Image (cartoon, rainbow, N blue to C red; front, top):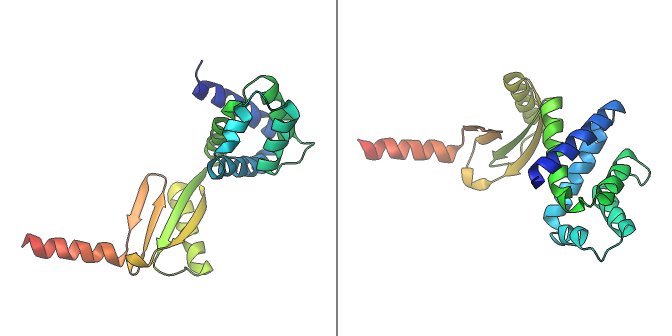
Length: 179
């Protein structure tokens, strides 16, 4: 059995428990923090896989990294994973849970890049357009990149809409060179 199948099975079981107790969103947010911690602190995965660390130390580490409550469904789940010797898969379980949550709750991930910071009203309009186009809510991050000169670039899953001034100028340049 590979880590992908193991991770997905554990994540599915956790989602089912979370759904029973109506804790999907809370656990999703904790799993986001945990995944972020794995990427920001690569030693976290090595520490969890190290047999020299006790169950209690590993459990405390996961609780702290995910910012979940010590007496919670997620903390109990972490304990279960450790007891089964699967703590080395926690990063994959965390990412699998997030994927399952997004599919079940119809959430898409998006990013908008603009030359200047966008007003909240503009972000709200973009959210509404995405909600309508994808029939899903969006987790939208914004990024300011002065190099695009103006306009914006919207990326949602595999969809990309580039209405930046930089791209328009490139298109004009290509047309002029073609003639």
